[in-house]
Length: 474
Ligand code: BG6
Image 1 (tube, rainbow, N blue to C red):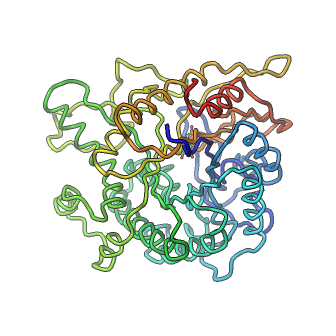
Image 2 (spheres, rainbow, N blue to C red):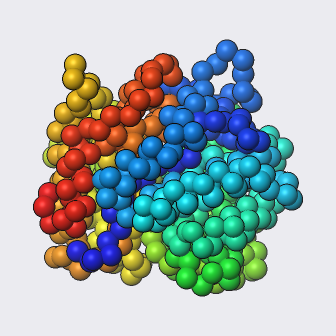
Image 3 (cartoon, rainbow, N blue to C red):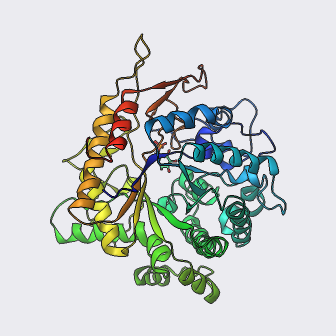
């Protein structure tokens, strides 16, 4: 393990800050998402509706409690803390010229607190929290004008925090929208709020994703002009897709599924659309608005590193009625008989992390940064305020071991590891609080009730030791 390995933890603004309408912050897409649970999707309402419960409005009140929280992270020995800057705190509507100074001042304070403890902030520019006004007035990322709004936001924060932040990422899990039938992915990735079964959904997704990819590439160039020391990455969800059997048709199905899910990374790292995507657009008669200037920007703005989340793996088998296998997402998968699943049905597959790291290394030859990994689980607090989360420790231990093998045996260049939700926060997928990932417990239930008191779980002390030994002692 390298000596400067970036151990830390990861969160996103909308899932923990709360203070959704404080100090001039505007409404974001996350502010109009209701609470749900496993098997029930979050609703995206038309604006903030009276009487509806929106868990992100309060988050875990990190906006006010961050000094305590960062202190706890420092106690664990964090070298880095990954969070996002809520776009609607800086540009409440998204299309203003002048930023909201109170929003900028919040991140001044937050980053100064991190740096005081020697923790480097690592920032995602867009993590499921675009200003809702851009959704309503422009239809989200289907509109080319979003590129300039995003770049104006990026430039503002690059300039403001150029001496505090070195590591940046553009769009969180840009490839989630591969499943264009899921309202949640379309809304959180691209601000596309569509009617169920909209026949335009797939074509709109490709258009929106293209504009995001151009915005991402231009942001990389802009960032490097502002500070050449910046390290700017993309961020993809790496879910390896296995074939169910050794049948050649299953192998091909898995290969096609990987292409469908990872072409975004080709564009962001190699600067060009892969041939299979160009061929697919032709076959489908899709003509996304992709200009020569866009292609030049993609080529000029390739990322410095690949940021990835890893939680689970998928398995597929060929569909006999579908000669050209098309992969959507989880709904197109089959159960893998060799792996267990979490209470929320996510497969638990540490080898998949080693596989995914190798796959990315083989394809792109860029440094990798694991910016999310973790187990969402229900925790019990004992009468004496302890949380014995040995299941979480077991999950993290197995995954760190897999990462170490990828580094030490396979020679993969991994810059760091920031497990997801190092402090309990609102689940993105379900809006629940009870789906906990943290090493720090937060006393709040699924209805927003609780003291918000912070407690150290067993995993807190375990991870502290892992960091202290630079991953030698798991
Ligand atoms: C990733 C997201 O998809 O997974 C996070 O980047 C999210 O925002 C995390 O919270 C875990 O998913 P969930 O649905 O369990 O919160």
